[in-house]
Image (cartoon, rainbow, N blue to C red; front, side, top):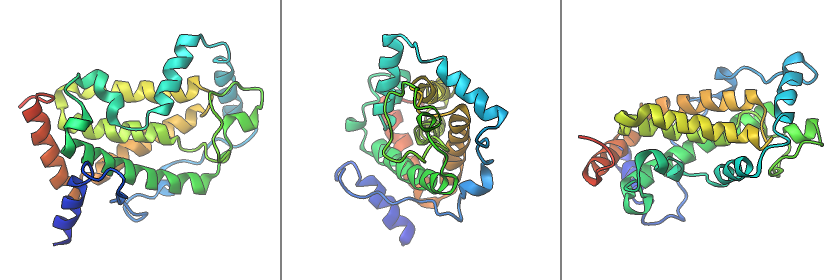
Length: 230
């Protein structure tokens, strides 16, 4: 009974976008402190090398910065439309939109647990001269990168829904994660941790019966709409 209620709730997300979407993953399902290494220590050679990498983007050209800013401002699965084509319109794909909302809710709850534990300072705290595209409200929220985790958790889910586009979807997620470095808002290890965590989130979600039910519905929708092959 509970499985059916949760699955039904996921499918109603598109009809009520303001509704709170529950996370399907608890700390018992996936604890970032048990799967991620600690970030490089302040003052360590790796931390210093990561700052050097970020400084290389201080003179980024306007077009590169605009692309990175656009990615940073887009926190949903629409970033994959360039891979899946114009038919991948979440306003016309309610089951897929609901599934992606579930991925996002579960990913954010998991990442927030990691950020709260590690409390790593953002790059611009370590070096105030960095020209970050934006400055986060919480300066101690660098590790892991939530944007990157979102991109990879969604990309891995979509790769299973549209397997013929798997490589391109994961490549798009990688480029999205790189935008966090281009914008000097995350260190390289933040992005690497976000990638690892995002892939694990997708794996763990696939073990949840309610998520799997919603996944199967989204798969049928994507096939019927022509986004995915039969």
